[in-house]
Image (tube, rainbow, N blue to C red; front, side, top):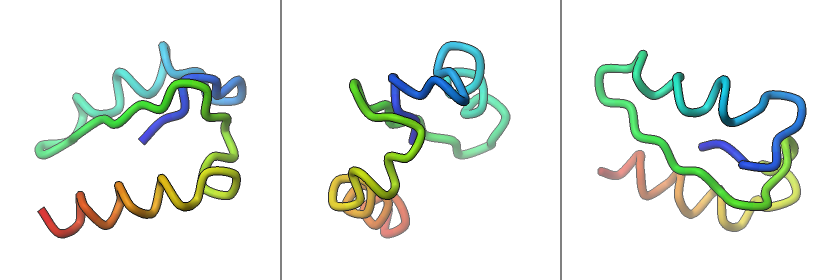
Length: 55
């Protein structure tokens, strides 16, 4: 999970690469979401996180 508007940990240099380091990695990117997306976009993030855990 990575916000595309994250200016603290930029998507292009981290989010795209991080998934390749994990055996069963899955990337979900969110256009317009900032670094603090777990707080500001909790409803969306939690829904997607639970879906991933259940899969």
